[in-house]
Image (cartoon, rainbow, N blue to C red; front, side):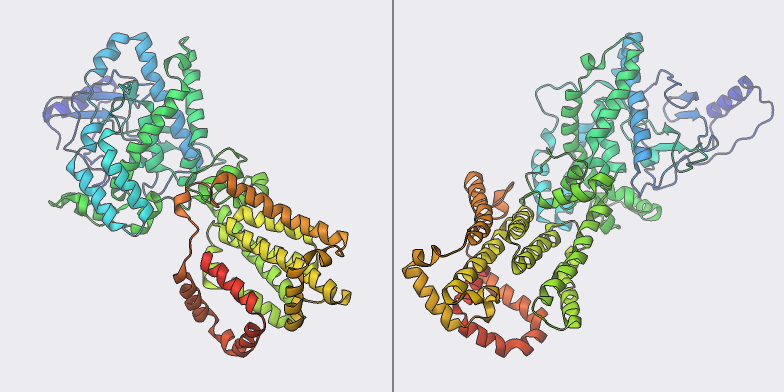
Length: 607
């Protein structure tokens, strides 16, 4: 029910607008659960009626226990909210960015035209960020999340860092955050959009901000970070620099009307600095509150009415929450940057060279298909290409065609490979480059095989082992063919008798010059193509100080004895039908090729 003061206000407005007969109904402004905070109202805030920036305010009261605010019914004007459980698309994000730029521009205009009014307004606002960071509930929530997602070591490590330093985020060298009037709560439920474009009914044509109870004086970066972390996707957040530039340009255009240069008042470099600081705060704020956004109204109402500490409630939408708060594979943000031809971007957490991202920029960049969907499509596409390459390699051994097809499909459907074919990761593209290396090596196209080997190293540095193995295979095959008989030149290495190879191996160790001086020029050119890549990789390791780039502590070369047993168990589980058929042949092969078996075991042991 309305009190007398509120009823009289409605009568007065009706009379002033020429209404004699009217009715009114009383309904809650928001559904219960949608950030329902009727008991919280910053009663000391009094906006100086900026009706061109906000919706029209018809009347209000700040009297204790009689607070009210009367403004236009935005739904009747054609405005509606977005689903708070979903992130906004680019059109909506751009609309909000433009409106935030207008809102923040208003503060600078107010300072310029009515400095006394701005001063009176600003001293009535209080900043609660430090208090919020130091509350026990925030600390309890962090501990609960660390326990809930203990299996994600990277997330736990990040949360531990924030837990130890969160209260010092804003304790810096006297940075002035009090720059503009900010909304303070820019998320889906406080935004309404209007759609007047008949040709594109899903594209917003205007935007309105609601719920100003957390309004305060602060940095523009606070509103921007709040909106990006709560209402946008990872793809848009990763591309935040473009939106910051858009925001800054609109603000600069607005201030030109009063003859001011935004660069003198608020340089873009300062905006970027504030953004980095508030990102730290907003990350912490998001991971501790995002479940409140993702829960349905019924569940959220039960949580809010629970007398226990609501910070300890289990998250209802775990998968959605986990997807929003956890980092996507580190490769996705870099893949999107390379797809947009921004080759100067890098993440120190990434330990592989940019082969995957270069392929992405080559295939998807010209088409501007840089979403997560298309990045993952790269892995699926190359998984299909692997079937073709495997079939081609198997066909070199003159098996029946249907056996080659089934064998190729079987390898690609190996569970680990099948899993990685659906995410944006290096494994599938790396395998493609290795298969291409093997195929070209078998056909005798050694220049191209060396190029494929070089690209395989760009995908994953440990692929240098495969390049070295097939370079060695070619060299030994050619040397052995010359040593035995030139007619062996076109025969497969595995068909040569082992007893001849043992004699050859002893002879070449005793007197290598005698054989090497008879090798043709083409042999040296082919060998040089492999050696040049291997030497380049060796120089890279020496200059880099490690085989990995970025976080060297994440991957260190060491002898890993248990890896042999992991490999044996893996092979037993997925290859036992093949073992049963080929076990006897394998034992005979191992007896004849002891050196080859030892080299394979050494590779497994080291890697």
